[in-house]
Length: 343
Image (cartoon, rainbow, N blue to C red; front, top):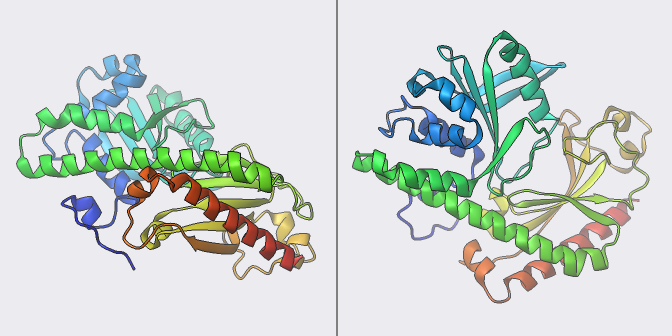
């Protein structure tokens, strides 16, 4: 159950400000010079000018020649995927790809696979390509062909575009979205700050076997070196720079945000060797459905926010960081007890 808060922002009213899908739909509309928002190409060309003067000059202000697609299909190495926003100008032989992550992280080497696919299918035929990896915090992409961009950068572009929109209704929508971008950036920054401090004062001290390997907008991933009965996977397991089977995740994604809780999740990769009958994984855990790439074996939640308390107010509160660290310690302790009980 989600408690409504007093707001005039349409994205908050609809409860979609944390939804990656809706962000992508909105961005695809704004990036499309023919999208009907009457802002022309100001969003699109500002991004291109930041990363590629060569492509900017090549387009020669023919931004309306781009067609914008959502969920553009990619298939290589027997793996399927979808580029979040795919923009192509057949006239100028230019392609711009956007991959956007909110509260999640890149997986299955998708950035490399997507760039490889575009280069093979288009660049080898004379197209120029630009790849933009968009996250609230501006995370560094695993593949250096992708340029990193954060939500504060997008906010600045929406501010620049205000003067180009003459329609009052569309201007209101664009300004609501601008506020969502800044709020998401600030929340991701504050969550990262809380996780960093919790790592310093709690995790390293009380849980020496845990190593923080990834922090996204509202999600911190840890490797657990103590679970030695699970052999390392042969692949990255979906997360860049990690190759262990077992992960512990502290998260406050949309489901937890709506309940005011923080969650701790024990996650395994469904590596084929570990799905074999008789493996250590199968002996210890009995997954109900092995068809998913990820299997969440245990999930524990604990209250973080007081009733009616907003996350931004929590982060700004005098004892917010201490409260956060206390809940993290409690969740990790409970998780360790659950794991021990299954040995």
